[in-house]
Length: 257
Image (cartoon, rainbow, N blue to C red):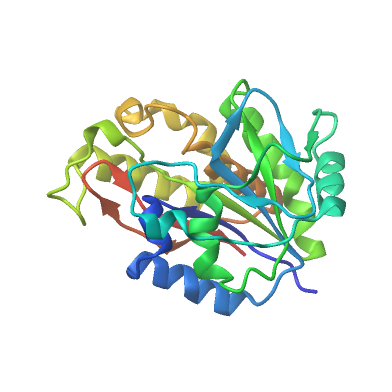
């Protein structure tokens, strides 16, 4: 099997799971092009806890970790199988970092399934999720990403799901396809890093609008895993699809071949 890519998706609103727009169309096209991997290892913004863990259950549940959305969204199920063998491989690859095997508490959250319903709509690719340890600094998350690079040679598609810019408090519903100037500035800055020198993502907090763009780390950190993989592979990321939303969100997505 040829090396699988690593990819970061800006997942935005859970509504993308049931909508068709230029972002979801790009995800579907990516799925058609990439073929069927052995499994997906997903790093989602929505499993942000105080330790590193990996899902190891046979049948991960579909988690509807949101509220206030239409019932149609709560009705979505993504019954992809798990892969305990891959969970153990991940734990080994990330050593000496301790990685807990989760058998029952988590599953597949909307950061993962809202994208995968378009990428692999038949839910026939095993999915394992890797938790983000909120206690680790950005540099350590890049290092963990680098350690996952070898899994790609064994048919594993490594996926990050979050947003480069994610400031819900500043959202402007009158700007569905536009960003504030500070959003565009930070998004362009990160794009330059990812497409030229992904390792330098560790210095992203030097940007003057970092605090506005990244008020909390959870949605940004999945990108660090993809940057770490690119740095370890000695390559750069490509933009899969770009674009701001609602003033203070970025849907920019990247792929590392």
